[in-house]
Image (tube, rainbow, N blue to C red; front, side, top):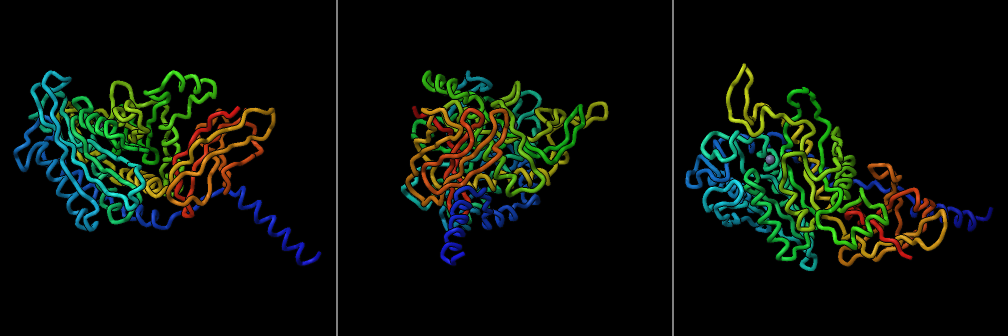
Length: 450
Ligand SMILES: [Zn+2]
């Protein structure tokens, strides 16, 4: 064979390989950040938050040692320490707002305040926003009891500690767009703090591409059934979007898009990135917005049309949530730090960090993603428009069988159109943009093109 021909064949092989290769880039910087997560830090944060006695939303705001006010000021002071290390790019505020008496679980007019840190992006033309939250408030057995001890170690000092650990580590890096780290209040009284922020975001037309709520991520032993598992964490995501127009509902039915809401795509994204960067932790996708009888801070965001999910431990312990601290029949009740599993909590925090960073460095998602449905063919043709902004290295087409919960195959392409040998009748597809370091956008579900 002539050398030129060999070279040509070799080139052909190379081209076809790059067009259909499975892409698993690991970003060394994300690996490094994940290694910076320290369970000692988070344990110290949880114990500090517990030390305020109660963080009930309506508890004392004046004392510097007890009550919600002291806790708010302490979280802000920690944010300010990270801000110094960030060279002033991180800024923090206690965002006060008033809830009128007579509201659900609010007896008198009350001033509430979310503690929020904002890491400004480096690209002023990129208006995307990512939000991560935990709730600062805690409760005793009686939700209106603002006086008794309510340590709230797991519910939800765990979520606040994870959020703060992300703020600490991420504020030492630069990201193109805005990241918000927030400890909301009023969760136990009726999700007031999250609703306030979700309304501010909606009215301000913020381009929130994802909101991640961490609520109870530090317990690995179930009460009653005594299951112990520190290798799984649940991610709750809405099945049918809260805000769905009639046209969207019609389209969902015609494309059988019942398991592919934007929030479900975010949940799967978390599962993929967690598999990539975190050892011994599997994301358990729960196909519901939240649990029975209880709500969470992601819900007001979903209700305002944003993509939002909740992280929550696999096994819940009802002896240690929403309980007065007491001993009965030799059983210790109360949400105390001694019942927490900080190594488990660390892994869940690593999952948050890897996901949040991968998204924060991602190119914008492709737009006008469509799938051609005009011909009877066993190939599928997907087309899309390249996103503006940060340079795109290529695109992943994610593929799964219609009955599968998670993506099973990835095809990487450089072009904005691809014909793939998988029948559109038998598989679901999405398309995400990827940069050269493997940071991927949220996947977009294609609309049919006739
Ligand atoms: Zn909670």
